[in-house]
Length: 336
Image (cartoon, rainbow, N blue to C red; front, side, top):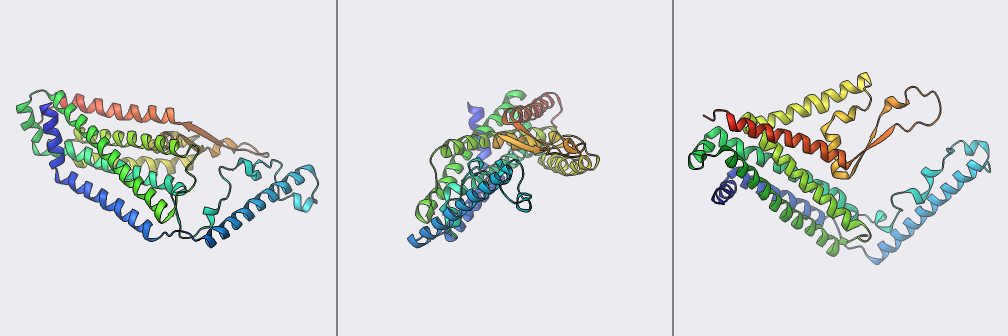
């Protein structure tokens, strides 16, 4: 317990951690204030006009679908029927994710329900970056300055010391993620209540928001553990930053271009970003153009899906492998 308490104090005292926390607060505050300034409570006239426009748009969708059905039955002239496919499911309003609503036609009005998805993704992205940088610098600075050696003189058990550092890091990031998420999403919910619209928050809105947030927090912990492990293996914070930069440039960008040039089937399966998407969103929808190359006629979809389970398995394997390698190296090598 004394070791954990000491690590909590060391983590909180680091200037880099304090700087990152300050940047986190500033970024969230600027985003919330900008949204508040750019939004207003709609008047009854604006709401009525928006409702009329949404109703007209829904009528137009239904009319277009009915014309497609008539074209499929042969009821339209050939020159008009050519503009519609044989399958009218793409025009069916019932198949859409959502129908047009009045909020879609309100300008300068913040709608919490509509904007919650991009806001949550921005929050998760920022916390992932925060977790990776803090995780890498936390152990990297100690290894490069000799702080770990001094700590081992007091507690000469390498695995326990490194485990306490990693556990403290993950625990602290969990607390920060919870507090930051509550403040961030709570601020935008208040903006929607006072200077905008709350939107349609019924049905599966809150369950979806909670599940996506939980997946995001897990992703933050994965990023922190990966940064911690790579910095431990490289003995420097810069090792983690360099490794991620090299992977992004050489693999995610360079190899992706090569795969597109040589037409490798399902090239996206080799990218870590694919599994990040699958885990965070629940399902990654990808396209494989090589499936349709040999078809001379007819409809070809060429898409496939990867579920969140596979995404979690891949991320857990990568993070777990890096962490085990870091502990193994830390246990045996010379730290001086």
